Image 1: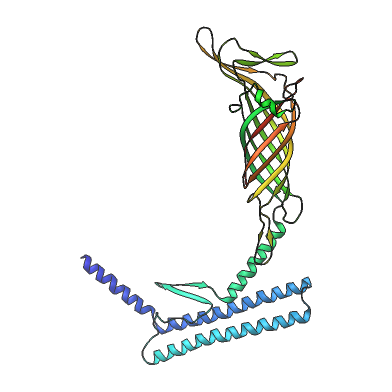
Image 2: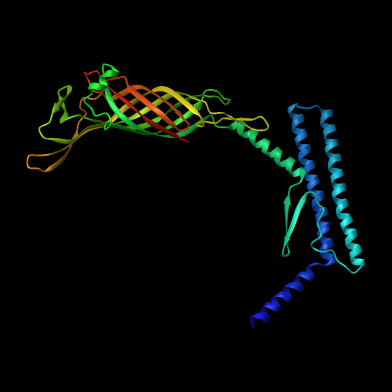
Length: 367
């Protein structure tokens, strides 16, 4: 039964295919191709004439030059129509001759049609337009897109910023005071999360930018030894703790408004037509500036065992005489999106002291 069905399917398919290859259908195909040739060449001519008119309106060419160019493109497309239609007419003559001889043009006969590549699947015909005219038209469109993008390219870009690293303090602005710091160097860390805007100083592509934004900063300071911060009136002191501490950490959170001048040495991209596109975060970057911040909260975390051996986790909410408004200097140097980042507070961490916060770490500026 299956063999019979298969034979019937093959037979009906053969009949259907043989019916498709008729003289009338082949003539119809040729007439449609002639119609398409004429339409394609006329449309291409219209586009070129419009381009010439625009150049004339902009003053790029004179009226006489425009008329000469129009005549040249008209003659060119007239020759193209004559050539391509002539080829189709020759195919029609061959088809008539085959019809007279009792034959019909086979589907394997190659169509001589420069503007179209055609292939057939079943009774469907597909065409790929790859003519020189279409290539020129697409090239003109591409150049126009580049021109518009070059004029309207963004002078401001945005980046998501994440930074983290070590945190500590300096006494009296002395870097050597880090050797005698009461805070653990590698366990005192900071984390920063924010959003920045990067604006060119000039309208044209350049390497000089103004960078600004907003970020949230978590500063952690862990004391060495068995000590805690104690608020004593308008002073904050570091004193020993009665129990053995496993954790003594002072954390303050603040909202910062950073401002930097950035030199971005990324190489700008130039198209074949000479348009220049601004590129950022593709090479070495250097930024220098500062920040102003407002503290949102301060707390001290203590973990220890009391006299009965019970583990205690204590959180103390207080400002510990910290300055509410904070400001300082910052800079970064890196490649692409990754930078080495340093920031230093200019005002003291605690009131009535000369202790200032310093941070160093890695910074990511992600487009």
